[in-house]
Image (tube, rainbow, N blue to C red):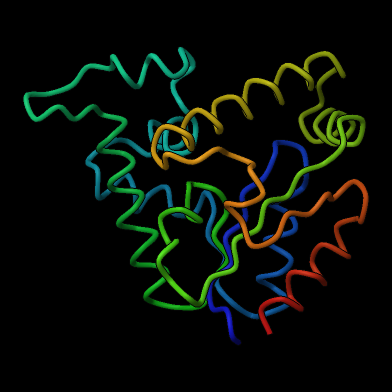
Length: 195
């Protein structure tokens, strides 16, 4: 495999997590998503519940929460400690074995490697709303709110810690619209790119 590591960043509701999981199965490689939360918790000394809520998403208060978050005498906040622990875990996983890593700024964390394929999955609003409504058993209005909140928090976290713009095509090797080409075709294209 020319590319050992696949990172998948995604819009909420685009199916990026599902696509990543299927790719890992088809390639017979490790899949990392929420299953790394306990490792991040262990390295940071924080609870898995806290990591689940904060490792990929910004505080609900937005960008200013990062800038003015409670910082210790070294200038580090709890969010900074979470990010550093997450960074160490992702670097260790990439060194250890071929894998698919979902979100968590992995594309940026691993940007200096030559054996990485960075993918961004996005989708059209109607399909994302329908998917979120079905998966989470919520109304379309609630789905729109969930999508806006989650993507805003992902974007804020990414933009703050990477000095890059979340979802900007030039940050990724490949950007795919899962609504236009479908999950199966997204998987096939990604797999073709790593061989």
